[in-house]
Length: 203
Image (cartoon, one colour):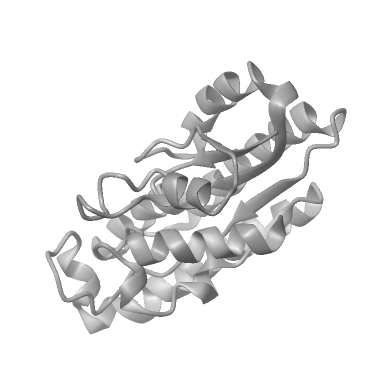
């Protein structure tokens, strides 16, 4: 039986770790966890349905599901913040999309009693010392607003997960050191190992 990894680059971080290091999928497998990677770098909530379609072909072999999504949607809120625009419509849309997605996952997994665990989103690494993907996040005037909006996203994720009795993994609290980041927003090899430990604790 396999663990299914759905979502975005939190799991599909192959492009961000160094060439001689391993991504989440391979670190998990090296730890003895048989997993199938359906996650795709850059995925947003609306694109998870395509991953679900692929997963359903192997559903009889899936023992549990881990989902990381929302961070790329959150980047849209960042751009609104940088332009001093309202995020109200964004959060309303985020909540509706997330509820629709969780409802579909619940429908798929309920009859098979497949446990589902969702990850929240973590803060960007404001003081990352390497290349700059999002130069604006280094501006102190944005930091509190970014944190507040990430907390709001995580509040929505938490409440929606509770609604469908999905487990919640708080990676935001866990990603508390720059070593876990390959850049401002992507998991490094150390981040891969951290995520493997968090998943292992659930399993």
